[in-house]
Image (cartoon, rainbow over all chains, first blue to last red; front, side):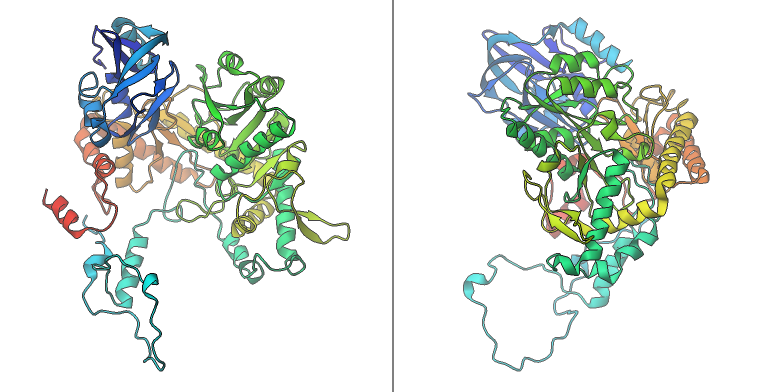
Length: 129
Length: 491
């Protein structure tokens, strides 16, 4: 199955995406992740001003099928949170790279291994086989 | 089929009552104002006694239970609960015993607990057993609190991490977090075992222990179990065994001899005490001699004069539950072990494993097996049927099984298997039942290809149609609200 993997993003193997916007990055979960989870019904995100650590959990996303940790692709300080998702999680499924964004972070340097769109698509295909 | 039972509120009519109280012969003593409830009781149903009885009896008849049909819910071991055990648990000496009764007046109950402690220790290869925990998850918490107490007792304050494989039951990481420890996830390898390289990389002086289910949630025996235990011990950690899948190895392998330091037994799975709405559970725990001083008390021991008494281990983490565990369940488990005997318990596991492999071999050509290996007491397949549209998912297959009168297996677990179907037939099912289930699963696979809309619409023969789980989770209505129900029905 083909999932959207926009070329301007970078991807963690734990299925989060990162978009560079000036000095900051925006973080969300991928189209593959939202598909695998099914309809998201609950989300827990960190507060503005808190710090996240690359490779460690920064929140929880829960669907009717499962509850999963969200892993930080980069370390840094949270400068904005998409609080709209707390009352309406539908955009995570319908628009994971747009209205479904989760955090805006000022990175401090460290990151997990990040793949480009082509590498990530190949990685997903391998999991799916 | 429309045999939905409406909420009890809909039968209500002002003035109907179930009980006629006799006339009051004394001056009424008013209840003090501050003790009266202040919230609005309007809408509280008013019914006659027969209406109440009929409503709840009809509800109970819509229940699906192991006494009404096949219930292959993976990792839950929904085996038949022999009625003999109910008789034992209802003996007045057990059923009417008071937990605060003097030990001398409770010798029969104490003897049963003492013997059950010994049987469970023998079956699992451990030195000591506590019957306190109320269910599996509480058994886990007990174990991890004991690990913590053990390390702290040795003055080792650095051990803050618990290793948990990615195939684990969700209760394992939840337990570690509840005990204030950090969860470190371990990957599985291509054969469904714990990835040894990942384990080696994550062991450290911070490792308090590891939690492992064996057989694991893929229904597979950990092929490197001895090596895993050795590595964890060399790093100074302890091994916790999740006993949820103990039904696969009774009389064949003893966790204590494999290298585990502590485990919980789900008496309500392996040892046939009822569960799934019929509980309560019972999560007795066993451990090595080294950890025994930390077990929760009271435990039971035999005195030199042959009488039994309660005692609390010297470094006990304390009580995990009021009184003496779920005692009625202990009676049932005792009755099960005594009626099966040693050879019978071994036959339980052999038959459970045989039944799961029969289902596996008969279905894996259409439902691909997650990892192609001989399984233990349960098999994990994938609801990905060749030739069916992509939007036919495991959920649809599970819902269609309801139409054919079967309880669906566990779905979407373990999380590492896409579209997982986790089937645990247990040893108590006949070949005839298994054949009927297999034939139904094959029929559903045919429907998935030819008439997928039937699967999407399922269930159509159950008291209620498919529930909108997403909306129920996103917009929950948590108490009876006639207006909200009317609004939903009009939509």
